[in-house]
Structures are given as C-alpha cells and as structure tokens.
Length: 283
Image 1 (spheres, rainbow, N blue to C red):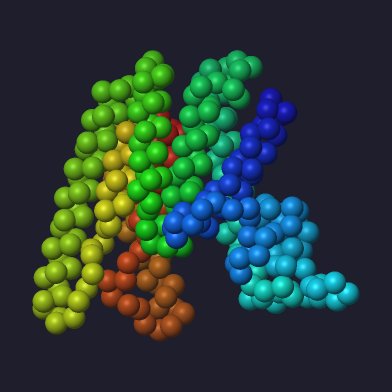
Image 2: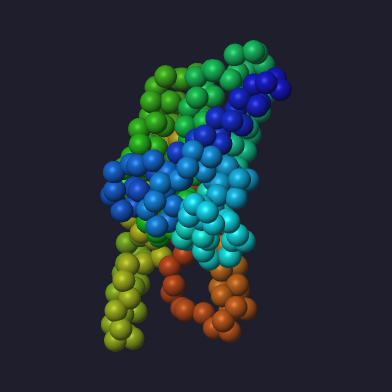
C-alpha cells in the first residue's frame, strides 16, 4: 500500500506539471511547448516541475555564465520574472487529490488492484481536469469550453463503462441536464440584471455574476456526480461561492480601504471543489 501511495503521489505531481503547462498555453490558444519561464525562455530540466524549480533555486533563468546566481527578489531573478507559487502548489494539490481518491477507492474495493482499477483511472482524470479548470479560471476569469467538454465526455464514458457504480447513465444524464438548466437560468438572470443596472447607471456593465463557461462546467459536473448529487453540488457551490466572494471583498477592503462593486469573482473553483467533494463522499 505504501508503494502504491508513493506511485499515486508521483503521478499526481507529474500530472500537476502537465496541468501547469496546459494552463500556460490553453487560454491564449498557443500550441503546447516545453515548460517555460514567464518571459518565454525554456526552463532547464530540473525546473520542468514547479517543485523542482523551487527546490533547486531555479524559479528564473540562472545568471549568465561567470556570474553568481545571487539572491532572488520577490518579483524578478537574474534571468527575469520568477515562476509563481502556482506551479508547486498546483502539483501538490493534484497529488493530494489523487491520494484522496485512491484512499477512497481502496476502502471500497479492498484489493491489490486498487491503483490500476478503472475507477481509479477515471477519478485521477477527474482530479486533473477539475484542477486545470480551477487554475485557468483563477488566473484568466474564463473556463475553456474544450476542457469542460472533455470533462463531460469523461463522465459519460465513466457512466457507460462502470454501470454498477454511481452514477449510472440515466443518473448522469439527468444530473447534467439539471446542472445546465439551473445554471443557465442563473446566467440569464445575471445578464438581465447587468443590462438593467447598466441602463440605470448610464455605464456599461458587461455580463453577469456567472459566465457561460460556468454553465457548461456545472453541466459537466452534473454528468460526473449524477442525480441527486448535482443538487448537493449546486447547493455547496452556491454557499462556498458566497463565502468566497465575501472573503475577497473583505480582503480587498482591508488592503485598499475600498472595493469595486460588481467585480467578477471566478466561480469555476467553487464548482470544481463541490463536484470533487461529491465524488469523494459519494451521492
């Protein structure tokens, strides 16, 4: 079990490194490249993973030959901008999620094939896709449709290949439809509210509280957790999203003494967190 857990942790860290690379290129539509620094220069092999970059003091390009590396500042290093903490934290978070899923699956099937079981492979894929969506939404305030569609397709394949586990195909489809319908109504309400407020203030206010990417993501989450799990996922995402919004407003007010009304807050991480919670505890 210890060796299997180590294998899961390593897989999670490597998956986190891939997630970081995808998060760097997908939002801008760039083709995938080898891991890079913020200035576009290639990272040495020891810095391909964020954890390695931090451990080996390679958060930026090494100083030119003949110069000492020196002490890195908080915003730049000898070779340019530093890698942010997002890189190692994403790798660690992905590894922890995969370990949680592995522990949950092993407790259910109680055999030596837990690591390579079909259920484990699907859960690891869920963890990776949800983390990728959360990272991109936090940084770019958008959810790539391609990733959300991939998540939904994964959930449908999961329901088809493992019909004895929850959710089954019917439950998954109902969950996806409910997730899409309820969040689409909320999306339309937000758009109408933004338009009405824009007319009243005489100042344009784009979009609403939710983006259409959030609608697609909740539909995909519904396919993953099924019915009635989607109702719990929506409830949890609403409450955690509200708590997160209050926390952001308080933090900004404490920092600047003011806050920007109707400032958009990424909702994808709350949807992802709620879906992951339901996948872990079951429906």
